Every structure is written in C-alpha cells, then in structure tokens.
Image (cartoon, rainbow over all chains, first blue to last red):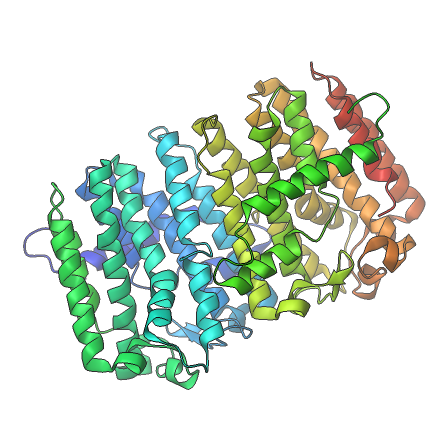
Length: 299
Length: 299
C-alpha cells in the first residue's frame, strides 16, 4: 500500500488481481460437464470483498513472499469460503434467495447442482493448494494444506460453527456459545488466511505465533461487525437480505450484548490485533489498516 | 495374501484393519458439536467392502510400502467415497432412503446435517492426507493430494460423473456418454487408489504408468458389475434399494448393451487389467485376484 492509498482502494486493487487468478484456477464454462463449471464460476466470480485472499497476500508479502507464490493459496481459501456460502444458502440450511446481489446458486442452477458446485469448489481448492510449480516448497505446502483443512473442519472450525449455528436457531444462545459459533464459523478461516501467508513466506515460528492471535481477533471482530450490519443496513448495501438473522432467531452479538457493547468489543479486538501485529519485526502497516477497516466498513 | 487365503477373506481382513484406523482418524462422538461427528461416524463406520482402501494397501505393499504409511491415504479415500454417497443419496439428488442396509444419513440426521457431514468427511480426508508423521515424505504427500483432489473433481472425475449422471436421467444416453459417466463417477477414484499406493511406495514412473491403466480397467469393470447387480439382486443382498437405476431411468450398462454383452465387457476389462499389472516387476498376485473378484462378487 503506497502512502496515499486508502485501505479501501488497496482491497479493490487486490480483488481485481485475485479475480484474474480465480478465473484461471477453475475450469472454463466450456469444459464438460458445462453446467457444474458454470455454477462454480457463477458463485465464485460474483464479486465479494476478497478479504481472505487479501489477508493471505498482505500477511505473506509483509514477511517476504512473492505475490505469485501466494495467489494459489489466496484463491483456494476464497473457493472454500464460496463453497461454504453456497451450502449455507441451501433450502435445508439458511434457505436464502439472494447473495452478493444475485440469486443464490441453488436458485440459479437448482439444488443438486448447487450442492455439487460447493463440493467441487472445496475439492478444487485442495487441488490448487497441491499444484506443482517451480518455486514451491513441499514441506510448506503440506503444512499449509493441514492448516486450511483444519480451519475448514468440524472442531473449532468452519463446519463446526455452521452446525452449532443451525442447532442454536430459535434457542436461547448464551454469550459463550455465541463466541464459539463466531470464532469457528468465521474466525477459523480468517485466521488460517493470515497464518498461511506466513507459512508460504517461510516466516519464523515466533512470527506465526503473532499472526495467529492477530487473525483470531480480526476474525471475531469481522463477524461482530457483520452482525451489526445485518441489523443496521439495507438490502442494497449488503447485497443480501438484511434482518435475516433476527427473522431466523439466529444468535448474534447485538441480540445477546446490545449494539453499543458489540461495537465496543469489536473496537477492543481490533486494538489488540493492531498491537500484536505491530510487534512482528516486519512492515505490517497493511495488516494494521485492514484490522481497522474491518469494523469501519459499510457492507 | 497367504497361499490358501481367498480374496474374499483377504478383503474382510483388511476391512477390519481399515475400520480400526477410520475410527481413530475422525473425531469421537463426544467431541462437540457432537451431532456432526455422530453423523460422520454413522455413515463412515456403517460397513461397506472397503475396496478402495484395500486397493491402496495392496498396490502400496506390492511395491514395498509399509502398511502404517498407507493407512492414512487408504482411509482418506474411503472418507471421500462416503461423502460422495451421503450427498448422492440426498433428496435433491438420488433421493435414497437405504444405504448399506440402514437409513441414509439424511434420513437419520436430517438434510442439513447430512450435507455438512459430507462436507466434513471431504475436508477431513485432506486433513488426514496432509497429517504430520515421522516417516512422511512431503514431495510424495503433495503428489498424492494432487492425484486424489483431481480424481474427486469435475473433469473426468467423481463430481463430473455425478453431474453427467443426474443430467442424463430420463434422457437417451448413448454408449460413449455412459462410459464417460462410469469412468468418471467410479473409475477415477478407484484408479487414484491404486496410483496413490504406488506414490506412497515411491514406485518408479514406469510402474505407476502400469498401475494407472490397471486401475482404469478394474474401475470400469466394477461399475458394470454394479449395474448388473442392480438388475439381478435383491435388497437384502445389496443393502440398498435394487432396481433403483431403472426406476430413475438411469443410464446403465445392461440398459444400453444388454446383460450378456455387459458381462463380456467386464470380463474383457478384468483380463486386460490382470495382464497389465502382471507386467510390473513386483508380486502383484493380490491385485490380480482383486481384479477377478470385482466381477465375481454378489453384492
């Protein structure tokens, strides 16, 4: 990020680069069976902030990795994020019609193809992570795959958080269960994004030991901010149906703690994240700016 | 396989070993969120022939690998196979109520948990493949992950075959499309099982170049035999609803070619597979026996 560049324009610039790579890293629409590739691309290339890829890039570049060596992992993590959105939107889950301002995958392609498109993006993510390239380091590659598969799994991780979220619907969810859901469903993959940047860069263990708590804090802050936006935004701003959490009696930070306390908690987490990442012996300005952006954004 | 041991008892013996490893390689039922782990274990530990794991073991051991080094990959492939069965059985797909003699995952746990249990088994498979161990070789690990993720993907692979199968329902499917579906949906992962055994063993490229066509042939023969069994068996023999393919107007070998020609084709494929694998400079007796068993089995 050059001195006069805002974090907003930084993220937009990286999103353009990421979209170009994503386009290359999934089969074209003309590859048979065409329908599955159309569905994968429909959801994957629908826009979105590309926050997780930006975190892989910002973290990895801060610790000395080349952009081209970071992009496959950045894109793989976005594929996993998109698969989780496609499956979460299914009628058996959150039953959502709108995502990123467009019909959800199952609304556009039918349920069977949407389930398979999610499966396919998850599978393709690991294929991309295990791809051959002249500059790859197999030891780091295996560690990175282990980190991501763990964060996308069931124990304090993506799928576990989604299960707990569904099971909590309509029930009285206490503060500790709410924090578990948020840390697992959103926090784990955001943390993995930051850590994977460090792994690819060959960061020292003491640096990775700081990237991880930075990631955990911005991950939780991101989900708290998301909960607040769901209460305070319009459909146009969000690109998805607002007030949906409340309608589904979902556990949210504002519902459990109120808006003011939720905002205070998010600010506190960001301040901690900035302090932790500042103590790494590297230029982490962008990671600090992204942490602040996470609670300042409007969508 | 010792001299007097039949392939049937060989497979049963290996299935017991594989089941012990599978039990250890997924979180226990008491690990939160308990419901997802109960669902994963319900489907994964429901029995089944464990043909794919046996192929990893037989192939790897023939080329000199240790059983303990093969088991994680053998189990990961079975996890991927089970995830694909859970998702295929969903109401939006084949809408099946019975699998391995018991209610399907979504009948027992609901659709949302079944979708997530499938996702979780796929994710856990890659976690297991990327696990750390003293004897692991990172280069081979990455190659094996690439091989499996490719076989589980959309291009001439597991998901692509399932998409083509669904799209072909009720339509006139010609012989070449039928062969595409079978090669992709069943053949790709069976081939990957055989090849991965070779990769873990550190087999030479010319050996892997023979394992692959052996796997392709037994994979196609296996699916042809499956199609024939669907027409000729009872529910008790199969552990799933027979005649289901016909009822759903699915493309099958007997429907396109007739039973006699289907049986002849399966025998021809097995003979080719035996000839190819016999030309590897190693003791491949078990792989030959498994090839013959594939068309001789009754369930």
